[in-house]
Length: 222
Image (tube, rainbow, N blue to C red):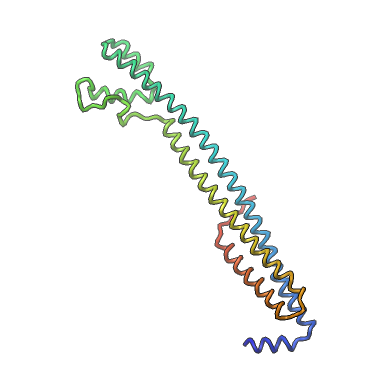
């Protein structure tokens, strides 16, 4: 088969050979230029995606820290109000105890206090020492802080992933640049064998880069 191709190639005149080589070079060059532009565009989009993900991660982390500070302050207040209220409880000042329960305890804290008092902690040795150990004790800001922290970690991981995708598209662009190089030097040589070798290397690089690019995720956004 190769012998037939070689004989057929030798049977062509020089002008026809030049025309076929130019045609092959033009096709490879055109495809490489288009795919280079596409991979560069994808790299830019993924870099933007990375920046946005890191910004969202930073914002979520800031909100998480703010929620944690609020939660800490609320828990400190719960501990202080409970300590003062329990003093009045053991002093037998029911009016003061009721005032704490109705007016000074936070709404989130009240269910835990009521559940704890229902266990008769004064006489029940199995009751928790404080209402803070009751399953009813919840702090919404603390839970919000944990959720925002998890969100920040997810956004950070996505940003790292987007960065890797952007780097991969840069690598693809480098391969396509090799295609452009090998295609561009075809006309610089007089030897047909060297020209074919350059076109072969350009074709291999083009196919390899294209296959690799097709395995990468793509973004389509303005």
